Structure formats: structure tokens, C-alpha cells
Image (cartoon, rainbow, N blue to C red):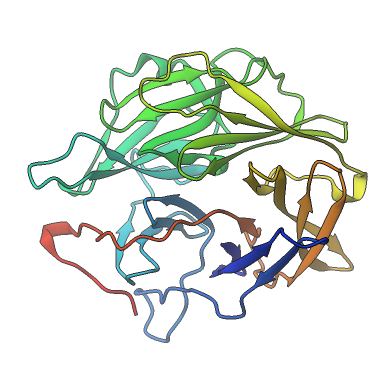
Length: 331
């Protein structure tokens, strides 16, 4: 799936030919903004995927929506701009409590965290309430980084973090929605803060992959975990899948996104080139041979916060639990 121009575009990837190819569908998936009566579309800023649901935020993070594109169902949320709901550099991640409720359904929750801050709140779908997370000593002793790269896997949230008061040593922070506790997990090595890009991606809803690029170098490495779950302790087993040398004209930015085909050892990245007041988004396909295939996905016309992202979407027919038992179908 490609997120571009504040909309979503299904895409197809062919890795079987001599030259890899990408086709971005012309038909887009978008949401009408319920706050407007003139068929105005909701301008998507960030997207987080879990269980076939998409959690989409808008630019000022005053509102967000949980959306199932397959069924059209939505659940909208509004947040006040005061109190504990600060909106600066805020990230929302969707997950679930794996301890089934009395009706044998997953209990979905939303974790809210802040870039370079240790404040966290959680929202429960079934009770329709927000609350602060208290007593999580690990989360309180860390600051989260690159929160826009946070991912949900098997109901848990994963994000980059480092210990408060240090400028080195990068970890993965896993938040367990069932226990509402955090745990620090190791990365392939003790990475310093001098990096150009650090990104997470999910493989087949079973593994995490991480992209690492050191500062002022063209070396990029893609690592993959073994199977990861709640029983995973501090030490993760990582395998290096790809090691690439990139020229300056394919340099990654902080907002680069990627997906990995582990079997074929091919990575697809999305990045932006800016020239002559135009912002052109490209999809790069790179394999073990270090050959780069560039696919133009067009000019991005979203004026603000319009970074194009690529992510692996697994469709689902699951129903979104509504407040007070109501269900709402998108237009």
C-alpha cells in the first residue's frame, strides 16, 4: 500500500522478472471528513497498521480515525489541545490485549507517546476512555525516538528508544497491551545517535526488520529478527539480510519507509526528491546485487506533511468496536 497526497493507493509489485516493477493503482482509497459537509477528504498525515485496521492521523493531530478499508467501517476520535493531550510530535499505535474478553474478541487499545518524551496514555475501545500509564519504570526511564516509525506486531507496539540522560545506545521498546508494561530489546549492535535513518518494518505479521544507516556514510543494512512474541526477553536474535552501498542521489531521509521480501532478499523503499519546487516521490527496489531500480510514483501535491510512505497491508474483515455498541460505515 502507498500513502501519498493524503490518500492511499493499492500497489502491485513484480519481483519475478529480469527487472523488478511496481504498479501504483490509479484508484485511491480515501475518507470523507465528517467535520465538513462539502465532500472534503480527510487529509491523512500518518498511518499505523494492525489486524487490517488503519489508524490515520491528520496534520495537527487533533483528530484521528481507525478505519478498515475492506469493510468501510470507521471510528473517529477528537482530542482536546490541552491537558495531557499535547499534540506536538505525538504518535498513536494501535494494538490489542491478547487476553480475550468474555465474548472471545480481542480488546483493542491505542497507545499515545511523544517524540523525545516519556509521557504515555492509553485508550480502551470497550470503555471509551483515555488514561495515563502509571508504574511502568522502563518507559519512564526512556525517551522514544523516531516515533513515526513505530509498528504493531502481534498486538504489541514497537518503537526506538534510549535511556534518559544518554546520547548513545539505541534499543527497541516493546509495549505489551495485555500487561501495559514495557521491555527494552536489543538491536543488532549498540548504535550511536549519529545515524541518517533508522526504520522499522513488519514481515508477514511474524517478524520485525530494521533499516540502519550511519551518519555521513552510504552504507545501509537491513536486519531481521527471529520470530518475536511476548515471551521474547531482552536479547533478540538478528540476521543481516542485506548490506548496500547507496550513492548520494539515493540518500535516505528521516521519513524513508521500506518493506522487505525476506525470501528474495529484496527491499523496497520510498523516498522523496526535491527539485525546481517540485517534490517527486520514488520507489527504490534493491536486491543482493546492489542494483537499484527506480520507479516514479508521480509528483506529490500535498502541500504540508505530505511524505509518501510504503507499507505492507494485510486485509481483514474484522469489525471495529464502536462506542456504546454502535457501528459506523464509511462513505
